[in-house]
Image (cartoon, rainbow, N blue to C red; front, side, top):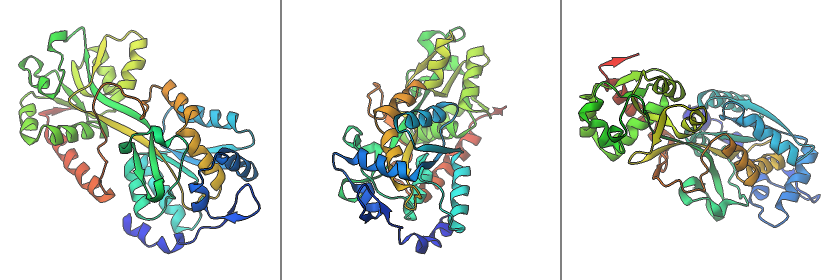
Length: 350
């Protein structure tokens, strides 16, 4: 895929001028870097003239619809046209559009591996956003002159959940070593999805290969389902313990009275979504206005209503961002290794 993007770089060298609040045309790079007190007014004025924005996002369920609705309510006259897709689907779509030189997407909200690939091929514009000082350095992909290529806008924290009716609280693991307790043999399960792959990656990085070998002796099961579906098995008691469960899913289930508890392990892998802006955005004012909104108080309020973690808040545990500091190629190679280790972990799978 990288070679496909590289072949298109010549088409990205120039960006069409756009109109700011004044009549003088400025480039999208200049508009993205604009950090004066009237930034919101400048962007909104231009966005109303553009009339709409095309937003590609990996957010699921109702969250992205409510986020778009909140933006439209705050900025009347700017319609959000959303395309919801997985990272892989979004990558294929952006590739096809670039090959055809039909630039449709304005703002992109997805996981870091795709954004890394877009950055490496000059397809993202570095930008300023008003709340960026609140965001920790490790949640932003920095560019020159104090700008960013993207910032994490939401997190899903992966930890351990156990069924309190089938596992005694004193046996519930409080760290990865706790999973090696003899009493938990045949009672632990991993999600076979990307969630399980990420957790294996954390175990390899922070505990090492010897730990994973010891874990195999516990005869863990692999359920080829999502983390959410695996939590349902924990709730029913079919699975006693799983270290591949999202905190936000547990929070929702606890409200329904589920007999479970969520525990952060040595580190908590954060499955994150970030916001970037296309270097060829057809609606540059609206593209930047939406990015500012998502990363601002309004967007964060909506995301927290859906139990997403806020990157600016301290939850009392150590978060780990698996993709941090890696190239797209390095991420792919590591994920291949983690996936192979996960496949080799169980004596049984479902």
